[in-house]
Image (cartoon, rainbow, N blue to C red; front, side, top):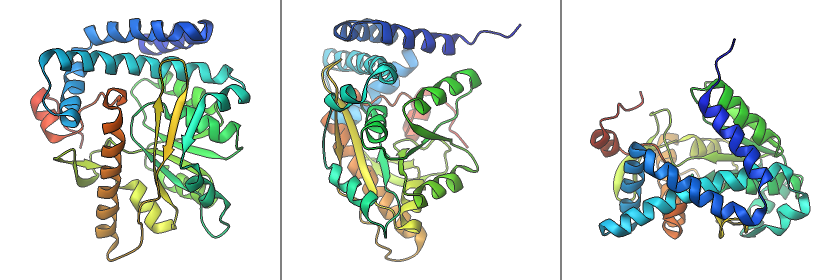
Length: 305
């Protein structure tokens, strides 16, 4: 008899609850679940606190505790709204999504001399909504790279969910770069979550005033292919009301010297773009893992190698 994965079971049940609830009730459900998670996830609560202080500066104890709670509430809302997407019609998706800067993506797709664009995103708001909007409303091919997690059952659940939104999913691994390269050349919109160096071999940058590393893949791919590298973010409005997406102007990926130097320059520009985006809604930044050397040291967590 196979063991039941508690994490996978929790997300599957959450998905069913999200789809069963009336839309008006999702905000209340998100708040209840988020506040509950905030009380029991002590280590993640510490990471959220460190991130909020990086973005917002010193806060009073009361302000910080409130901001931490709101971050967990927004994270619950992210899943609650995301799990509702597969059951939504094209008209509902379009009605719930507002945007600015979409012309940057459109120009890259429509230019026959340019490969598909790369969207560099932070873990902020709800990026799946934008991917679904691109695939369902505009009929664009969307490829996304996702992190592998320890639970195979949960990973496969997430893959199936995102594929149900029209995305082609590439698991992060040794062959992911070649698969993404083919997608770019096939004129896909490629979505890369890039505010965390998962593998620990990224490019050194300054990010919120502290040195850390971010993945060099987005810059490397853009420099090698000529693809537009577009910092993109999707903010949630009030729970249950939709998403506001912003596609910024493409980063300057002009070759200026050695590839390594160009990758570092472009990755730093990407970090600056993420700072601007996160500062607009820091409580929607659901980065719940250590991301700076000082995080690993303060929390006594081994760094990835």
